[in-house]
Figure 1 (spheres, one colour):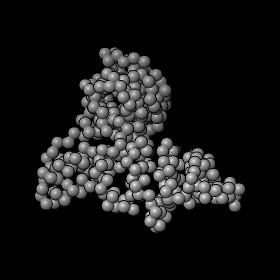
Figure 2: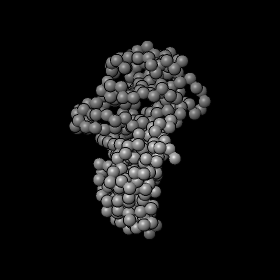
Figure 3: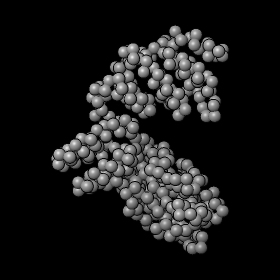
Figure 4: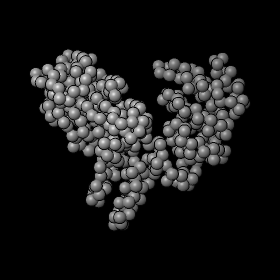
Length: 366
């Protein structure tokens, strides 16, 4: 047995009093195997911890990187299983951990899963309180319950009750699959559904194109919109003048499609500009979905960039934390199309929404 592992295992009796060392070893694990040996030894120590320390191990997930989260999640599973088998699970402490929204969403989801397995009646009792939870994953269960209630009411032709259940679920749902399902059910019942408003998609933009992206050089080229926003200006473009035009998306998921006004051009660069008015200075997120090369600026500051093409796009593909200032906030998106001509490469588009960390839409004041 290796000396490090032996020293930790010999310290098992003291683990109940202090989990600091093994937790730090696991939290230090990183990509490409960094810290794996130490984490393996620490993991074995944690799995032998007293069940009463389960909330402390859960707390170790707070701020942990994804790899460390996985190690800790596995250790927690072993501790919880053995505690349940011995009827020593600290149920009240796990519940307290779950109810503390300062703990990380991932750790609180694990805590709820433990309660679902150990105390299903208690978990069901707590479920309604999670409808407005900061964790979108914890909202899934109560939203699913409302969906079930709506379906049961609809099967009994109680359309008003079904509608009320679906609308309550819709108000709290944050995951795309549940929202799509609820939107269809509400529309089938003749209820209006404003998906752009629900998600917080920005629908009204000024577009300018086509600047060049021959040999993919447009991504790094500083075209005029990056240095000035003059909406009445015209610039030399690729085989045509580039000038600003109004564009309003008609897509339920806020897609801003350069192909609609400019046709399916290749090796080109376009920009989209809009203004978001905030009632107050606040933290927020700009969430973007795009399969082209892109950059995003907020109030002249470059937030992030991705020089990659046609690797797929999805809702909330990129989450960019921002600080909105009170009043007008200028958002500029650069979107580059490359030279590929296959059918699956024709998209020259993006979708962008403004929300808080839970995915709840933030409405522009204007």
